Image (tube, rainbow over all chains, first blue to last red):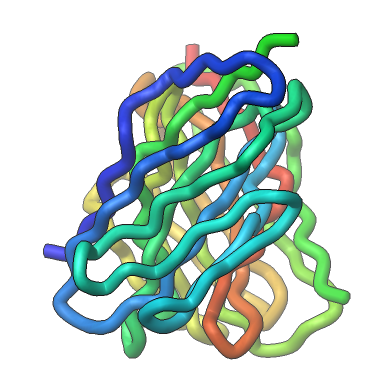
Length: 113
Length: 112
């Protein structure tokens, strides 16, 4: 079935370090891909998205490129800040399925000053 | 702009008691609406979604139910709560050409 797999957390980095959170997917169709972020005690916020192969989504210094050949959508940021500490979720959406999302298990990021 | 409200924000209920969580949206019409649950330390699990009034699709068999009595109202219910129902419940709606979902602030439910 359709699924999303993220790297296990928690990930602990020092401020200004480079961040990569891996995400791979399995889908029978041609999905749209998303990264969501959840700050402590809050709901989810859309961070970035990509709707077709080779698209690059970007927002707030974060980037992810839709790689169809490797079925991946890895999240990267060149220099993390303490305020980036949160849980990050990768998700996919297939067409004609009511718009529902399939989420990965989430990766907790902790950035230390 | 579209806004999602969830009520209550937090709830503590004993095992066996009933449950009603409410989600209302503003600034849009005929949205697709979704209920997700996030158990402690886990990812999000889609529970129900609705593409219109009275139309409910269930993703996971459980003791929960959902209803959509109005276009902008989505309710999650249970007749008898279980300990395993504890979690963070998120309501979401879809918008945009690529169907990205937008989430409400959530309700934290603790079943004791």
